[in-house]
Image 1 (cartoon, rainbow, N blue to C red):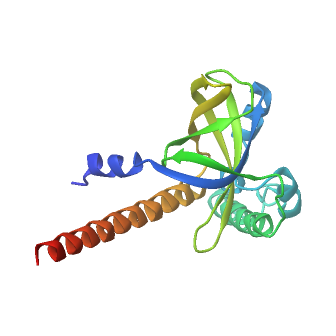
Image 2 (image 1 turned 180 degrees about the vertical axis):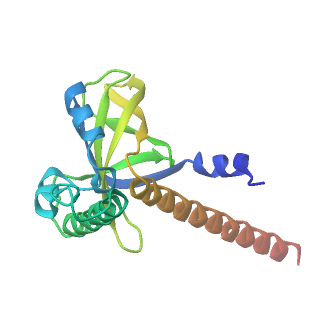
Length: 201
């Protein structure tokens, strides 16, 4: 039986980091529109969706193709659109993204923001994840925590994933950072152990 508790602990692993990002407050109407977009293409912006297209293979094909085949082809088409969109996004200049200190897990993140919002509001967060092949994501999120100190507002949000691709990219990045943190901690302990051994000689 899978160790769900262990998996959840890994998903809840929090990592302090510096990421290039920006956040935009969404109205309820905007959130509903964004939430109901084709899941596998949700990593692309509106501009990328126009470039990649969002056609329905069901239209005009039902007379020649079974519903199951049409659905499978539509899913394949959506995934290809997602890949095309991400590829264009990754090669687009996003000068409006700024480096920000964040505390991030696979389920959400905490960061300082200038956006005026309240608990329960929805944000669209655009962030660049420095993986082996850098990924730019547009994630929906819900504000669950607000703290104001010294005139600075810190927000805590939970991610509202719309497809596996979004979640997989974030989880992959968090696990990568977790491995790096554990590796650095091990090296530091090894170095201290060597120094202590040298002091005993």
